[in-house]
Length: 399
Image (cartoon, rainbow, N blue to C red; front, side):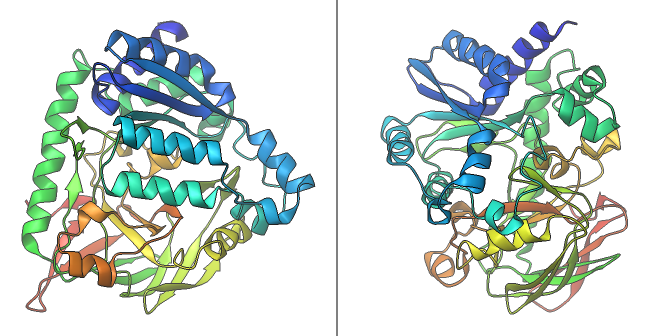
């Protein structure tokens, strides 16, 4: 199969299953300029689905590098009014955003001061994005595009063919009817999320190499997974692939040590051997063999970035995890194993307004990092105080 056919099939899956583009809808396609071939195929697929208008929103990381190297430090993290106007337009028009995740040059910024790299993302834009997602005001999806440098990170060589084969398996494009397979898969995730919600766990405990950590949940915490339904009734799968069930914790309650089990791709740099210490809900210590300053810079960019906004569970049935690869791409690695995120929480994952006001984190940051694997045990504490197994050897112990 040639690359043009692969791009078309991935674009069609993105539009039909991921974004679920609606007739007459405004669609924005966002990604680095090097991913233009996939973005163009997505535009064609979205028009075939009936979109009214499809517009590109290109990113060039070399502009970010130039800003860090040569621009005034005070401008880092500034949001442009036209980008904020775009978000307002998407909300007003009930539009759709499709984002191509990843960097064509994944370590482009790795030689720059990490504290500045961590502060380079547009703060107000990211905060507004969190609101759009949390209030389910648009349908959206994130996908990734195979490329030589990503392949080099995965395989140690620029084997794009091998990467395409892995991506196709991970997003079920290798199946006879990928759309039907996705419907079955999303329904299973929904069932697992429902079962977890019904358990009403007070907290979760993680134990494994370098990890001994407990995080509290809110009384009205809701587990989600599978597809999301917008406030105006459009279901969509926000990540391709998606293998997780997730909720937002009580941001006031987190204690212990966490060791990330996979590298973290963060704004043009790769963070390796990341470890956190948390006390009274906040990250109080960060260490890593590479990239620690970039994480510290991001945590310092927002008052609540040091609190957790998400905990997610992934079991061994994950099509991503079965591949046995480290993708060095958060979209894929977070769907290979359980993870957490520091920063913003999800409004729709907490049912009670009083709980949201008291314990749901609000931040312009939301960064996922991987903390699961076969050696990590996860337990849930019932409201009675009893601890029960949730994940053992990468298998769910509840149904």
